Amino acid sequence: MIIEFDPAIEAFKREVAAAFQSLQRPEWLSLDPECEAYLAHGRQMDLNLIERGWYTLHWPREYGGGTTDAFMRHAALRELEGYFRVPTFGGHGRYIVGPALIEFGTPEQKATYLPPIARGETVICLGFTEPNAGSDLAAMELKATRQGDYFVANGSKLYITYGHYATSMLLAARTDASQKRHGGVSLFLMDMDLPGVTVNHLPCLTGHMVNEVHLQDVHIPASALLGEPNRGFYHMATALNFERSGLDLPAKYMAQLEDVAEYARQTGLWRRSSIREAVGRLAAYLEAWRMVCWRVVMLQARGEVPTWEASMAQLYRKDFNPQFGKLLLEVVGPQCLIERGDPRAVLAGRVEWYLRESFNNHGQGGRFVTRNVIARRGLNLPRD
Ligand SMILES: Cc1cc2nc3c(=O)[nH]c(=O)nc-3n(C[C@H](O)[C@H](O)[C@H](O)COP(=O)(O)OP(=O)(O)OC[C@H]3O[C@@H](n4cnc5c(N)ncnc54)[C@H](O)[C@@H]3O)c2cc1C
Image 1 (cartoon, rainbow, N blue to C red):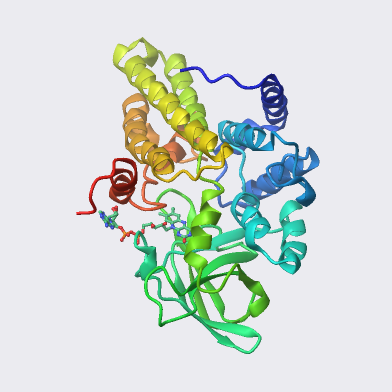
Image 2 (spheres, rainbow, N blue to C red):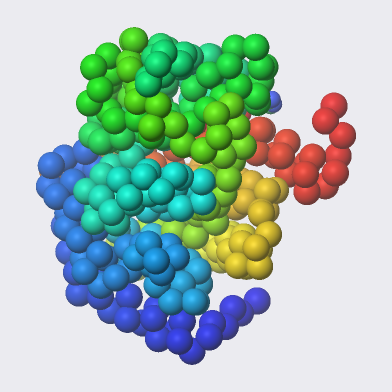
């Protein structure tokens, strides 16, 4: 299948690709994602996008967004951000919280939060998972109890990406204990520097940092309540739907696969038909995944809400990772394990990083949970 874009979108893609090509430095690809230089690079890339008017082009025009075909431009931009491996620290703000504020924020909240998000000044983390609520988020226990002008929050969130440098958290908390499961949960945009917020780092095998975030008697101003009280679960689903396609991911892995194929060519390994075949198979897989992502974009462009289609895109990732890890071991062998900084590291240590990333298969729910969503919603199979 060949996707053809409108000529204006094709021209936009060429413009973005040329810009990323000129901004990209190969050494950035080998940086530790938690080091200061990588963070500085990410911030600089955010500023570059802002300067070009691309950072929030998917927002409505009155909030600093772009043209009528902004939705497709945004999708094309996401794909290229993935291919050029642009760090997106402001991602949760510009892709999830910004659109959520535009949809159900008060005028005061829009005036307070949208401008700093659009200027790349905020890093927002998502506070949903808890020690006893992962795949089954409706089991969430963290409480926020109304006391005058505040909600007083107590409890813990777990595995929070960006928690160690986020300025705010989109927090889901139980505000009505009498309602069970999906009812009685509200969303807040909580400042991370409020007294009573403690962040403990949990380094992942993948090289990323996630965090435990503990809240003890944290007084969250009632003005930080986002959307209707006790409807947070539904708002959360809407907010996450704004960024469902995951188009950046197959593009990112295609760039990594090209990197490994180039290494195989340079080392003569490309002569082995088993390696050419494995690379070809994965390239075809990535193209199929990309098509599923574009299908999600097309549904959203028509105003439909993708459910199982977005889960299919997620499943592609979960099934790709172990296959890519296997290919790396086949092509590079034990040298895969040599980290950046060591002169023997392959591709300046990028391969070791790719291998670590191939273990990253657990976020956004396990593979079986994703398959269950597809079975129930896509294939109409019974729950049991
Ligand atoms: C790198 C990383 C970053 C993350 N970032 C964030 C973040 O920023 N914010 C946030 O809120 N959360 C974040 N998470 C949490 C993530 O969303 C959860 O890990 C995920 O939802 C799974 O929850 P869990 O870890 O409790 O696993 P569990 O829910 O305990 O699942 C464990 C295993 O059991 C299986 N399983 C569970 N239920 C079922 C079922 N009903 N049927 C069949 N199999 C089942 C799962 O597939 C999985 O294999 C992150 C996680 C990771 C790994």
